[in-house]
Image 1 (cartoon, rainbow, N blue to C red):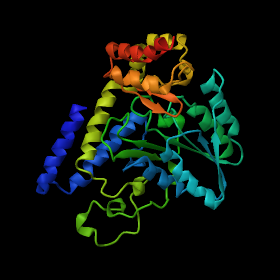
Image 2 (image 1 turned 135 degrees about the vertical axis):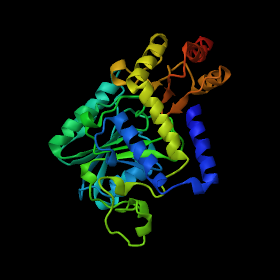
Image 3 (image 1 turned 60 degrees about the vertical axis):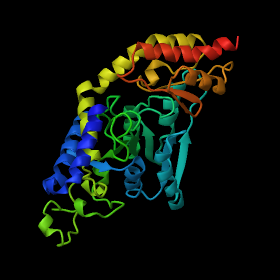
Length: 359
């Protein structure tokens, strides 16, 4: 957004005159960011939110501090790699990585959720998953997964990158043990900054890096050489070094302020209404789209009929200047409040042209 860009430019100029940066500036804006983000995810403890540079960084802190020696880690098939590779490290420690795949049934999302719930057993230590699947927007029933994990003492680790900011999320309701989120997607912030929520299961753990600002009383610059063995409270030990980023933090700050103004539930309503008729028409033409109850409205997948080739569709999309993503076996469409009915008409035109050309 323009206001996010403006905040970044202001931060650049501030760095040009570093004598305007005070000791308080190393802490205040980050603290404000925690509070803003906590409002977005309904979290009552802002000090459980930390700045991270990436999802893989946030998950590395989780993997390195699991309170288990062995067991099963459950993943959904074809998750984004940042929520897969960190877990692979646990294989050498005796953990088993189990991937739950969807079926080819018409009720794909419903059956996938059932398979995940059925896969949770006494050996399950972690379910690491998104709120929606990154390739096709399949909506995972996190509340039911949480309840099942409570029965076996497992942890719920969520990659919120594809949902938080556009889809309502409540820490109070879902009770994740960790929620890791990149800032450049639906939080609409810049690249190389994200936010992580760590629950009580990770209190007292060891961060993957040792930096000065995460130590107790680091606000007192005059006392930094009296090295402190204790960390800051709650999750603050896991925050990335140099988290007082005078360019990226103000940008993400502005982005989340705007999202709070819009509200994710309004974004869902808008995108649902915007695409309702188009989805109906595409379905009637033979394109595969998940049932509304098991997909998000801000991100959903379209699977092609056999008569349409991927190459033909890509050519049609390019010709009609429509930007979508090809992820796995799905065409990923990601509408937002900046899209309108004209955009939807262009999408429909681009999707339909290969159908008519094949007849």
